Image (cartoon, rainbow, N blue to C red):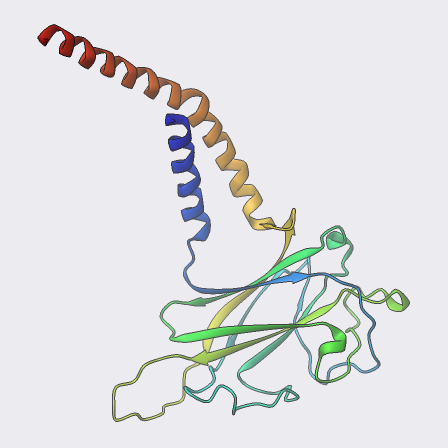
Length: 228
């Protein structure tokens, strides 16, 4: 019983550490599937997330309050509220992984919400071929996917309502493979540290606490018997 309690406390503490973020975080889980590609490259240069560069920082102006559907069309590649990225899932360092997680983190002091849309090449609102510096597999198809990140102003203004243009919001985008389909790569080193802590708690600390509490309980029981 004490062992389970101690282990649960260690696991709870580790989850608190792992879930601590410096603001708001939105996550999209991605399944890598191979698909065909079409014939034209996007007219704008998109940042590429790959094993060599799994993290980028950028800024966006949030969509104005109450105008989520009225700002940019699906085909508008120059929308100031959108960031398009290429997810290079074809890279040899990631070929053994079938699931990934895309994480967008925003500072807590900006009243903005984030929406992530992930597209396969055939699902884009325009045709595309991969940029030259990604790892597409040609005739074999590609596991490349594309993410559109959009920010929305969620600030609450006191009446009378007056719209003021939102400031650009900085944010970080991270693409990671998932070990066993559930465990982000960045968590593995942390677990490597926590597992010995759990082992020590189970093998050393818990038995000592158990012996101490058993001794206290025996003393209490002995005192009770004497008083009776």
